[in-house]
Image 1 (cartoon, protein in one colour):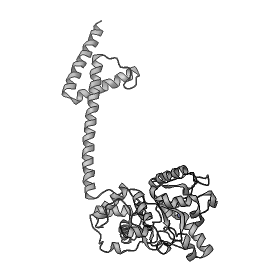
Image 2 (cartoon, rainbow, N blue to C red):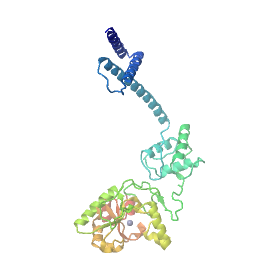
Image 3 (tube, helix red, strand yellow):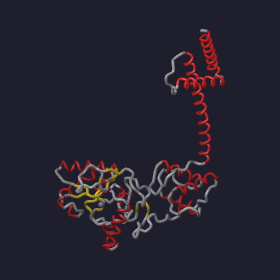
Image 4 (cartoon, rainbow, N blue to C red):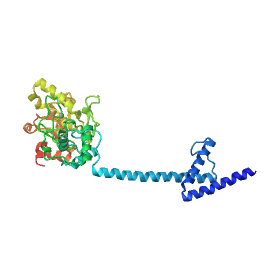
Length: 389
Ligand SMILES: [Zn+2]
């Protein structure tokens, strides 16, 4: 009996000490209670947080434990805060560089960060989040100043680490002439590389792609999707794809033709740079470069790479892409109504000297309703329209 009293008294004492410990946050007491909990766990062979009797003493211990945890959390939060402040300070000194690789046409926050870094070391590049000619030229210029870097004008891990060193040193680059640099060939080994200018914004709905303006080799539209329209084949091929906005507009156009009892088919939409390169090389070897270029585009110069073009056809011409399409009911409807859905006939008759291509009544290009109506009503080409706007 006495022994029991003694134990009770000891427990009571512990309780009092624990309460004092709780209110004063006295660390030695905390340690004591912590070790008690440990003991208790060991004695009962129980796992954490399970099987405790809810006696007052243990509730206090629990509270104490919670309080301790909170202390640790507060401590680590404040540690994190000061660490973050330090990192912010470093980032203020030089912006963080993105991982990964960028090619012309890449875009997003990473490109924005890179542009911030380039500006920091003296390159006057736009801050638009698009890896465009200016940004590529800045990278190319920077690479030329560092023997250990490849000279391709593209951003990757090696260029990143050299840039990082430069940023850390706080030294600026001599950048006066960087915009005058000619970017290196992005498509080595191509027998028939694109000529003319690189387009400024490949994602622009009004992007002009022709024999004078070409898309970057690495460019793939970011929002390709398959329009829900009939194709004369079943395979899942990239040529079924279009940019989202164009694909939705094409669905509406097809719905309208179906209501008229017409049978239109989509034949060929998106085509990658590399696929176009294969096609043109084949055509050029077959017919000669110049003749091939009357109807076939060099890689980078094809509108099909924009994801905004679709060749359409019908069974009456055996699903071929031929000028006879213009004489079919489907072809006539297209000529009269495509603009109401945002599409133009991109290569009209009599404008070959402007577009550089022969008449193609089947090749639809999405430009949006407003522009399409202005172009079609005034018998213009996209080239003529853009010259006046
Ligand atoms: Zn076409």
